[in-house]
Image (tube, rainbow, N blue to C red; front, side):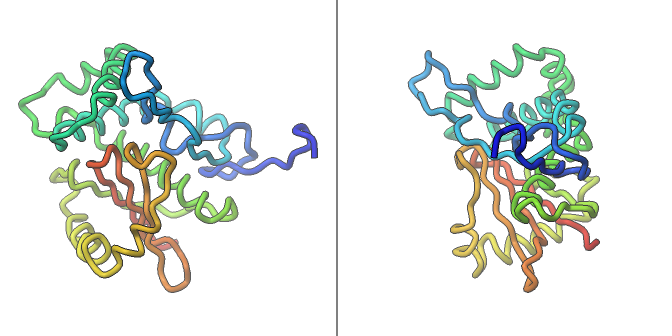
Amino acid sequence: MSRNNKKKGYCYFCGTEETTREHFPPKCFFPESNDDSNDMTDYRFNLMTVPSCAEHNNTRSLDDEYTALSIIMIAKKCSDKFPRYITKWIEVLIRSNFALFKMLFDDFPKTPLLNIDRIRVDNVIESIARAIYYHENKYKKRLRSNCKKYSPQFHSSHYLELEKDYLELEHGFIIGEMENELVSNKRGANHEIFFYQTLKDEMNRIIAIRMVFYDSVTFFVFPEPS
């Protein structure tokens, strides 16, 4: 079948006809290879994509960069062995959008979690979760319900009601008997940058998605029953 006659897919988010492909997570989360660095790994090789429309791929780039930098800065605070290539990637993101850097650091260090807009971050995390859901269901089923999001590193008073969900998940399949199953279920091209795991019920429906960024920042997404 020729490229022009190739059957089109449908957007992971809204279901309209595919016009492009969306990386999940967005490409800006992955450092570019740097000739000046000792680390020559191509972290943008073999990135995962899903079918997308232009609206749900091209209109969110500033939010994607904002979220990437927010997560990187939290990861840097959490890790004693933060890789140098990530530190250099922070510099690249800041140079490309200094207003973004200023927005994050206006109140730092007065606030423990920088000056992060959680709604903006959550919207990007939910988009990644929807892409994962679509990918895991072989492009046949989109996530149509709302989602709960929780991250222990991005904890705030607005998300206290999700702490119980997180603790149950932590004991249930992170340090519990399901851990071995999840270890074998790590998905993603570059696990030191990003990987995800899914928890499914007896009917093989995804009930929780765990995302880990830069080996230190975790987000859980709980699709609400539709």
